[in-house]
Length: 455
Image 1 (cartoon, rainbow, N blue to C red):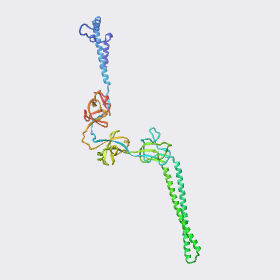
Image 2 (image 1 turned 30 degrees about the vertical axis):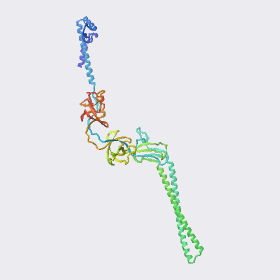
Image 3 (image 1 turned 90 degrees about the vertical axis):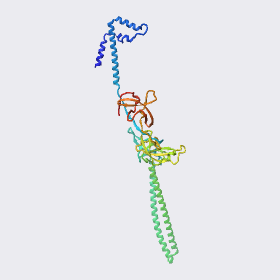
Image 4 (image 1 turned 60 degrees about the horizontal axis):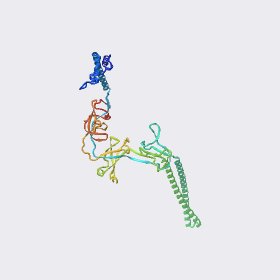
């Protein structure tokens, strides 16, 4: 309110003055030239002022001074307004911390599944069913690469009518073979009874012929019946053996038909992730068609090659740490499960497999990981900052800097950088432990800007 009253007073003082003369004093606007004479504008203004008289000259000077004061007042108000409008910039900060770099030879490893299978149908047929899951939009869909399945899940099924017919045929053959076996058993029993009677008759005839109480023709007839009964017994036994063999064949055919019927369903052998699906509904699938590829991600292995001087020091059961490039902030520990006995013919490196537990399937097959091997040397702790906190020191400069938050003020400080480790970089000189640096967006903050730290 006070500033508004001052402005009104200045404007009221300017009333009655001519707009032509609302300029600074002519002596200030058109100074005299050094040397001979005066400039034309100065002479014209001075003559005009003499014509107006002394009183008007004084009035003009007062008006000009008032305008100068008004301009200065407005400029100060505008400056204060802009300064007031300059709000604090919200930033996220991170404290400078110590870091111990890992030493030793670094090797690159490839993440692979511990188990991966290609599933195919043992029998041929048309695909009639595919396992489906609910998608994100709520609709049902077939399995796609990346989907997880549990052990025992029926992934696909062929048309079963063809194999049901074969199963019923096998069951009929088994029934017939079982009846033949029963008949052969009964026939064998009759043959055995006839053989017993014939054996007894022949024994009596033999005794009677020895006592000359039986004629020779009667003895010959008894002997013929005995021989015939023995032949029938042997034939009945052979027929029973054939019936038993036929029944065994029928049982095997039935078992094969049942197995073929079961093989029309493809079941996941273990909990795994789907790597690939090559069939659709209506596809004619068979033993030569890979229907699904599954990979067990509950545990993975990191495969890498090492030279012979390193391979001789590696033992099964040794625990090592690896770092995935896609997850640089996480450390994964695994155990050496195999060291190749023979070096690769082309690379002359020995293949080493490091098995890691992966219950949450964070590590994916195909990822690249790094690990360090060798005797660690004595290292010192180094202060590190995020790579995103590093900016150019000045416009067009070659140096680097970080923005340090001091209270609520941003201070750009030049630093000397060292090596990078993942998404962090060491600072050799320029910052102290515990100081807070702007983690992101530092390039948009100027020296001395007000900042507000947000979590």
